[in-house]
Image 1 (tube, rainbow, N blue to C red):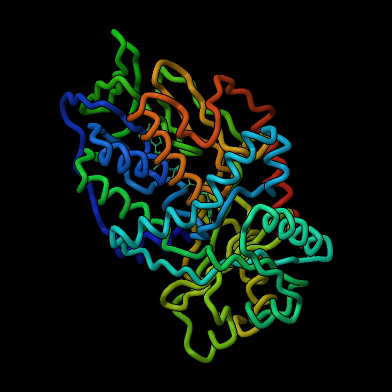
Image 2 (cartoon, rainbow, N blue to C red):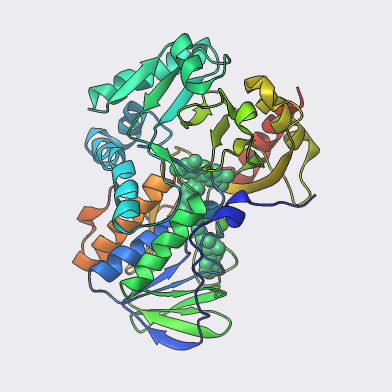
Length: 417
Ligand SMILES: Cc1cc2nc3c(=O)[nH]c(=O)nc-3n(C[C@H](O)[C@H](O)[C@H](O)COP(=O)(O)OP(=O)(O)OC[C@H]3O[C@@H](n4cnc5c(N)ncnc54)[C@H](O)[C@@H]3O)c2cc1C
């Protein structure tokens, strides 16, 4: 069985874009058409800058494969962010990303992006007593910073999820779910309608800095610009002439059923919350607009669908919801997450007016949209004040391959038992 991405089959946004041919000149070149690149293209166009974005396919990377949980903040609790970055910079980043769900849902509403947006809220579910302590700490820290969250006890969590597996949960009613690929395609469509030039089947192969300009080459064309954004996160293909971003690759996969009948879906996520749990080898679960059940976990499915991970997905779904016993999972697909050592994204400045943004560490819908918008504002205003995070010229991440293999091994062992 081959990978089969549900979002590709069900995306209501269907935009396709032409190939880059010949030489083009723009204010900004963007390499990568996920949320970061498309949001940057949209904001740049709105600010009157000419912008060209290239990719093999819009939403080919994490933006077309993820769970679709539109959450606030990063994975890290806010005190940790402030501890790592220092109080002033940490508060700036926390405040910026606290508003990220508003940014995403406002863009969707304002531009009529057809992505099954459902702002019913998300639940961070405590899988153990330690998990419960973790969400209580998060609740306190986030509430102290003005977030309106509800801590649900075991019974309330059972009512909200329809599963008796959890010790409690943290409900964020400001968050929600989307079809992630549709959202990305919608952003690209809107960016193009505002004047951005979007190209598909056009991978950057070489980038050079000549006479104060960046020249980005593809197989059939090139773009000349003063400003350059590399927005490839975990998916950078071979491009000569620029440093590649360093991160630990972490694989995450999902499995989905066909639309479930009324009898089977009864009691499963009655309020359509998007959920994930507190386990180190974490899982996620949600339903889509047509009542397909979608479960996710850490692990590399490989092209031919790893039996260890796919069997775990079926077992895990039944342990959460016994009514899913014997229900087939027809979709299996995976993606790659770029994890940084401190789990904080990076704005890596590697040349004059040239940045690479990556390392969302598994929380990139809100942050990618926000960082993309901010870098476009920084280009437009010719200063970096709008950025939620100070750019760095340090691209050092340690033992990435070993750490990635270790995480995959841990996930396999966890999914075997
Ligand atoms: C399985 C999975 C589940 C996740 N779940 C969630 C979630 O529920 N909520 C959440 O907030 N985040 C989630 N994330 C994280 C989120 O998806 C990413 O952080 C986000 O999509 C990153 O967006 P991006 O635009 O930076 O990069 P991407 O979406 O990865 O886009 C990078 C693009 O660069 C292109 N590219 C690469 N090389 C070149 C080149 N040489 N020339 C041109 N283009 C190139 C690729 O084709 C790709 O389209 C998840 C990630 C994965 C993988």
